[in-house]
Image (cartoon, rainbow, N blue to C red; front, side, top):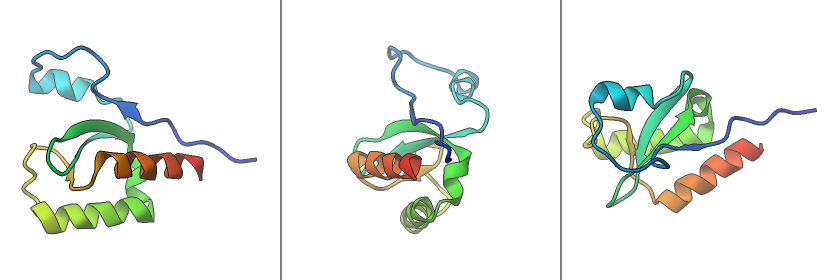
Length: 96
């Protein structure tokens, strides 16, 4: 018997509109973190914080640290990888 991790939440599934900081933080459920992913155009994802301890995810965090240090261009955690690769990683983490 195993368990499945929560599904990835696409934070941009609702219609676009201008949001204040307090409104955007309210869109992140408890136990999750917002992450911007992409090499050129960034897309916002909301993932469970438990993913931060996964070895593959930690490799992405190391790449982000090398690329941006602690000054992320989007004002939040930014991962410099292709969106498709990030989605594949999340899917594999949810399946394990």
